[in-house]
Image (cartoon, rainbow, N blue to C red; front, side, top):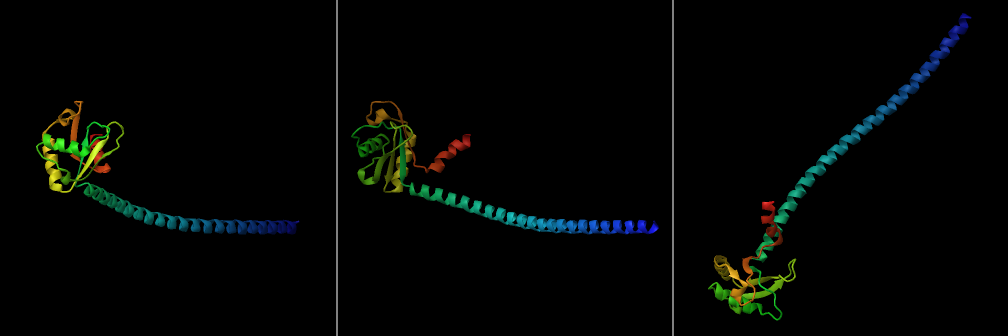
Length: 184
């Protein structure tokens, strides 16, 4: 009977050893997967940091490009004025309207001073602004300075309404939005 017990004990020890070997193999597999997962995690963290740094550089470049575009857009408008509030009339002669505006502000505007003059759409179709491109910036600046000192109205220019007329620099869309952003 003693031998039977020893055999049973040996059998149990073998089963335990087999179980321990299985558990050890599973543990080693899990340990390898964990090591591999940590390596992948570290690689992803490193790649993420590189991408974050690259994104910061690209954001800075985009900001510089936007600034450059705004400067180019504004430079292309350096000879321009924007006139707001002048009534829209059929068969209008914008050059004649400019001539009358020049008389009102005591700064004559001849056709030879103007490269081009046209209306541009606004949100309200009945109130289209006038864009004037002068041949010389000096002339544009004189007209702007004198127009700012006088409160112009449509009646001053021979129109029937008493609505105000505003003469401003022709700002690019980005710069036009700045005053609104500053007050918000």
